[in-house]
Length: 84
Image 1 (cartoon, rainbow, N blue to C red):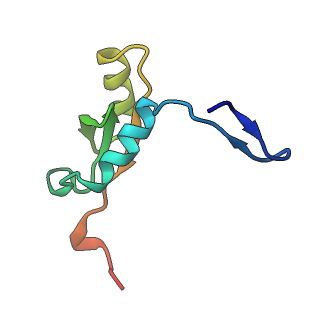
Image 2 (tube, one colour):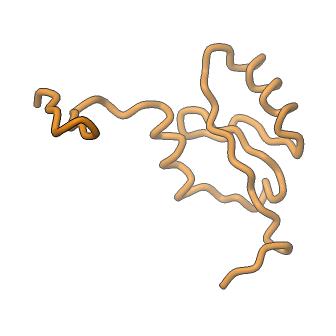
């Protein structure tokens, strides 16, 4: 399929899935309990690090995975979270 422009704000494309997509999609199946109240870094669908300090986590991931763009997420502490 060729890319199709549908007005100024829409583009239909058959471009391949990106590593960022895999990281985002992995959130649906991830067991968050070991990471409660931490920030986690996901690259290519895998948790590659976690830390309570987001800036420290980013520094660690940048040094361990140069050139990769991590997906960073804050995992809430379930005991401090209200569910409705």
